[in-house]
Amino acid sequence: MTDLDSIRATLLAEAAAADSLDTIEAVRVKALGKQSGIAALMKTLGGMAPDERQRQAPLIQGLRTEVSDAIAARKVALEAAALDARLAAERVDMTLPVGTGAQGSIHPVSQVMDELAEIFADLGFAVATGPEIETDWHNFTALNIPESHPARAMHDTFYLREGQNAKQAGTADERETRTLLRTHTSPVQIRTMLSSSPPIRIIAPGRTYRSDSDATHTPMFHQVEGLVIDRGIHMGHLKWTLETFVRAYFERDDIVLRLRPSYFPFTEPSAEVDVGYTLDKGRRTIGGATPDGWMEILGSGMVHPKVIAACGLDPAEWQGFAFGCGIDRLAMLKYGMDDLRAFFDGDLRWLRHYGFAALDVPTLSGGVGA
Ligand code: DAH
Image 1 (cartoon, rainbow, N blue to C red):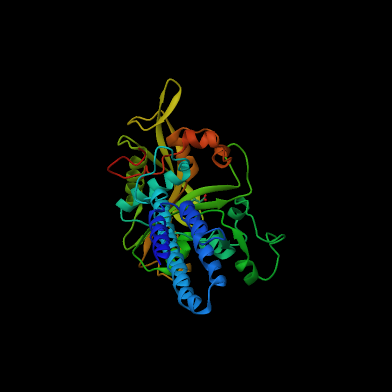
Image 2 (cartoon, rainbow, N blue to C red):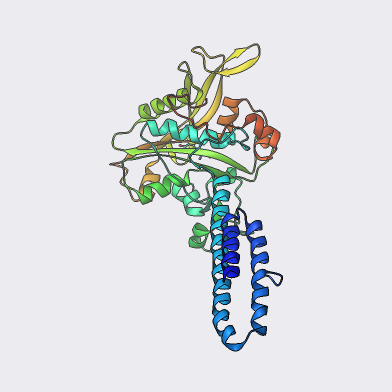
C-alpha cells in the first residue's frame, strides 16, 4: 500500500508540475509506459494468489486511472494555455492605425474621387453609380443621341458582341437593348431620374470606355457626371456650382472660369468650361485673377427637355443642369503627372511616388488634397 501511495504522490506531483506540452508527454511516458512503475505493479498481479489479486487489482487499476486522468487534465490545461498565449501573440487590433511598415497607397484616381465626393457632399450632392455594361438606350438614345446621330460616331464604342455596332443589326428594339461598355457616365443621369424623383442632386464618378489609345487617351478612363434636377434651375446655378467645385478642388479662391457655347445632344444650351491658368517661367499653374491662358476641363449645360421627358418627368415642371468631366485629367492637372498611360501601368515606383497614404482621407477642413 505504501508503494502505491508513494507512486501516486510522485506521479501526481510530476503531472501538476509539468509546465509544457513536452514535459507532460514525458511524464505520461514515464508514468504509464511499459517501463513504468505502474506497469511493473500490473505485472506482479500475475504472480499473486487469487484472493490477494482480487484485493490488489482494483487498487492498482484505480491508481492507473487516477494518474492517467490527472495527466490528461493537465494536458488539456496546458493546451488551452498555449492557445491563449498564441492568440495573445497574434492579436491584431483592427481599430489601430496602420503601422509604419504599411505597404500600398491610394491611387490618385481614387484619391480624386474621394475629394470630389467630399466637395460635392458639402453642396448637398449624393454619389450615384450605374453599370459599366450599359444598354444602347441608356448610353445613347435616352440622352437624345438617336441612331443616326453623328455623336455616335464620335464615341468609339465597344459593343459586347461582334457586329453589334452595325446600324442594320437586328430590329430597332434589339438595337436599343444591345449592350456596350458605357462611353461616358451620362447614362447614370438617366438611371437616377428613372429610379428617384426630383429634386435630384448627384455626382456619378466611375469608369468609362472608348476604343482610343495614345498619351492622353486610354481605352478605359474615368469621368464624373453631375446632375441637378429641380424647379427653376438655370445657368446661374450651374456656373456657381462649377466655380465652387473648381475652387475647392484646386484649393484656390482666385480661379476664373470661362463658359464657351458648345454642343452636346443631351444639353441645351451647352457650354464647355475652361479654367484660367497663369504662366510662371513657362510653367502653367491653375488659377490667377488675370489668366494668361485657358484650359478646357469639362462639358456642361441645361438638361435637354427630351432627356427629362425620356425619363418620365415633365420638362415644363422640372429643369436641371448637368456636367461631365474627366477625372484622370483633373488628377493630372492637380498632381502634376504628364502621361495618362502611367495611371494604368501598375508600376510600383509610380504608385509610391504619386499615391496617397491609406489614412489620408480628404476632408474640407483638412484640405481636400492634403
Ligand atoms: N458625356 C460627355 C462626354 O463624355 C460629357 C458631358 C458634357 C456630360 C456635357 C454632361 C454634359 O453631363 O452636360 O464627352
